[in-house]
Image (cartoon, rainbow, N blue to C red; front, top):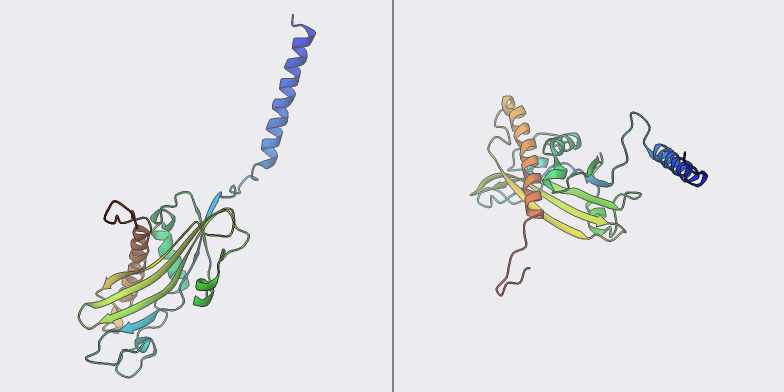
Amino acid sequence: MFSTGFGSVIATLLLTSAASLAAQDSSSPAPGTAAPAACELHIWPSSPVRSSSNNYFVMRSIVDGAVQGRDGYKKLPDNILSEEAQMRTLGEVNIADALKLPGYAVVFHETALPSRVIRTTPGRLAPDTPPCYAELVTDDVFYQQDAIDGRFLKAIFRFRQFDGGTTPSRSFGTFSQIRLTLFPPAAPEQLDAALEEFRVAYGAAAREFGEALNRPPKKQKGGKTK
């Protein structure tokens, strides 16, 4: 037989275990709901596609000349890369992994931010977010026509990462440029293929940005890194 003292110890352990299990159950998510993510990646789309030209021998270089159909420019199609198309494309390329942020829950925002807000906001663009938080903004997407090199999609991305607090622990921004061969369409029947090429090029630009974001710093003479 167990002594009275030993039995008391066993009873205490059983009560402690039961209390621990009850506490775990009370903090678990309800059936059918996901546990809150420890880290979040918030993404904002670009405003409508813009255009630029370096074809100085044929036309004046007017920003958005092709978008507006100005004199000397063939007007581009409307709604080239919608917010929905951007979100779908970044989902297809698994943008969190492309940025080397495995395990981050991706949160898409449907409305583009003004460039002034993107450039001047010192803290997080999304309030009430978890301590482990990052943000990716497509600042602008351009169709660029060059007199010599050809046609390109040019996307400007801005990335910031926060490890708690409101001051970013990492900030990086640059542009990615992807060659186009079908866009803009030469005939109405080529419209769908041209728009799909532009959308896929946007995904390729996002992957290229992820590679640039995580590229090891260059070493200077003497072994120092930039």
